[in-house]
Image 1 (cartoon, one colour):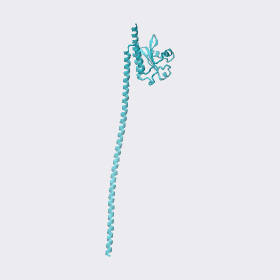
Image 2 (cartoon, rainbow, N blue to C red; image 1 turned 60 degrees about the horizontal axis):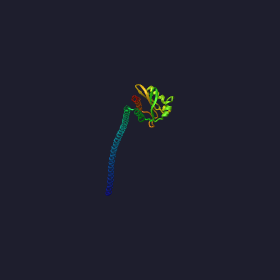
Image 3 (cartoon, rainbow, N blue to C red; image 1 turned 120 degrees about the horizontal axis):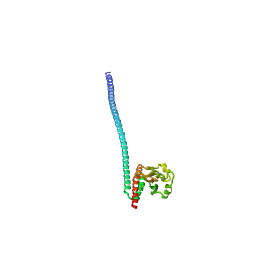
Image 4 (spheres, one colour; image 1 turned 90 degrees about the vertical axis):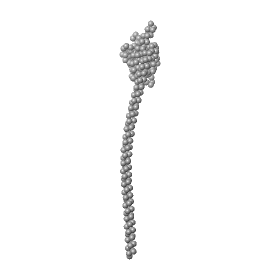
Length: 255
């Protein structure tokens, strides 16, 4: 009997030990899980902080990138402005050089034919027309003294003798009376039978002594430019002086 009771007690102890051992294992496992959860939470929190920091860094880099893009765009605009200004100054310097050379050549030339040749070169190479005529006042008449690129017979028979509105004779006489350069508008050029584009009075001491008629412009030049107007002013005064004194010198030489 005692033996049976002792066996039961041993069984109970074993069961209790096993249960205690299982409970201890559960507690230990729970502690491990708790520690793992804490580690995961800590890792997650760290990752979240790192993600926030990374997002802030990304936002900062994006902001820097946008700022750099604005600076680059501003620098590009400034470069374009400076480049445009440089080309404009370069063009102005070139225009001034052309004006100086044209003026110098007019005053350097002594012979009448040479002066007429220089005037033609200025119109052809600088203004951009290969069709021109040079007139001179003689006893209140308008004489054609030189031309280039146009039919002289046609000019004399139709353009010069024409009494119609807009004829070369009428325009030349008008600019000599007024002393004001005539520049045809695109509509006027389209309606003109002579293709007259401009007419420049040759003015000496406030009096017009002649005129230069410029006809069809070259194909690559649809309109006159600011330099052309400066050249017109130069021709109006300097060419007039050169022609006048060359004519006087020729008359003195012949007498």
